[in-house]
Length: 187
Ligand code: HEC
Image (cartoon, rainbow, N blue to C red; front, side, top):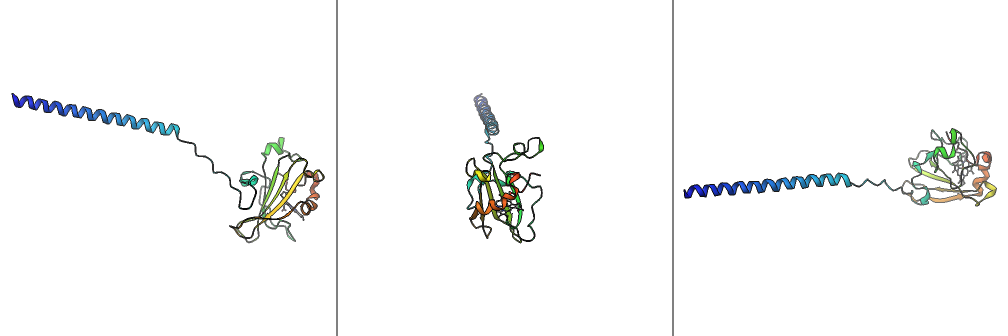
């Protein structure tokens, strides 16, 4: 009888232990799944890569390659002397609808427009020239309020430096005064 009771007690103890264990495991499982659920709910949205300007360039042109591109195909070097020698792309910090409502480009460009041209020099594989036109109300009413500036560099990792600005630029860009001094039209 004594043995029987002991066995019974042992059995009970084992059952209790199991139940406790099972309960604990269940708790853990529930907790885990809650945690997983929490993680999916609160998982932070990956922030977009912040745009960083190429070294030596002002911050307002950071990420310009994401802007609206005016030309459909890269513009090849002009034979017989290219003022911005290289293969070029031209971008503007406006959406298509803002500069071409109803599909037709309107002039002049709105205040705050930034038009940027990058050129990859012949035989090179990095951007070696950046030319910028900024439309700033009142800055130069004689030339449609454009500010012109151009930067160059001679190595892929080098900083850009200012090479020329304003007068030398609008002297030539005035040829297309009728389309607000910007040669490249939206394609
Ligand atoms: C001798 C003429 C000439 C001079 C000088 C010149 N440009 Fe240009 N520029 C052009 C032509 C032509 C284009 C059209 C794209 C191409 O063929 O390179 C152009 C394109 C540009 C563009 C892209 C928008 C557009 O007009 O198509 C910018 C920005 C620009 N030039 C800035 C400058 C700046 C800044 C200077 C002065 C440092 C300058 N340019 C001097 C002829 C000139």
